[in-house]
Length: 71
Image (cartoon, rainbow, N blue to C red; front, side, top):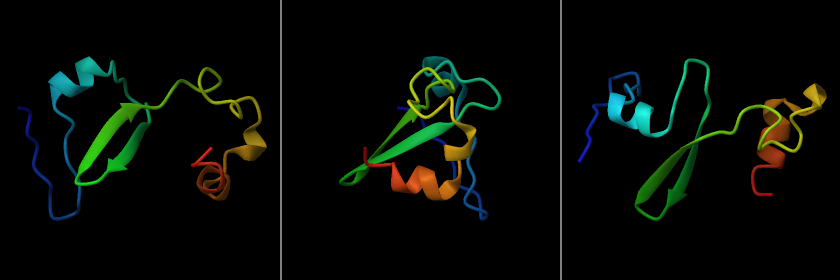
């Protein structure tokens, strides 16, 4: 079991074992998927690889991310 603490500012450090397992590097984005009482954390694909809109910078706003989140 891997544990991290939540600070008073709702921040946490991602443990080294998790960073290694997900091959996380500085600047990587995480995706949180809520499944009942659990949350699954995955690394978001590199821009352009897993993101069909990655080539279109005009579609990278927060509003677009929310609108297309369930696709």
